[in-house]
Image (cartoon, rainbow, N blue to C red; front, side, top):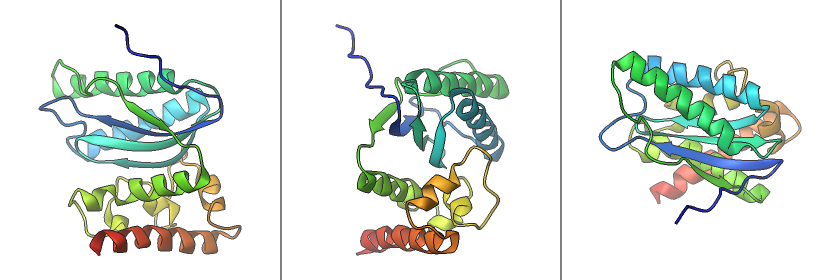
Length: 187
């Protein structure tokens, strides 16, 4: 029996994850992570998406993207397919980089969107890679907080507007919100 079609909506906001195929890693190092971000930029531009957050680990990644058209599947096929082909060429390998389908959860409320931001930012801490989420260089958090230049595909204005009208205030509130999740994890 075929699997049911994926829910795709115009104007949808999705928490997207894709995991490595058994026995492989998605990103072996900084060069591969950088290449993935370059391909993410191409995908965001091609499909007109708004990328609100991202985090790249070794075995998987997380994205928070808004799609003006109902095209999450087409965009993810483009991104994962293109990166998978490049990674196999770069490594001199031949097999699937990603396991099965990507996972996409439709975010249906503002509070859910905020929790997804926090979940994505805290992922490297929960994976034991860093103690502070602001230390992880392969996440959008550092750019959102103004610690580094943001990639052109990251929709900083939309994210910060969720936390306040003034950038400095919004960044302070975002940082406090993320740190509250960190404190809850430690308790």
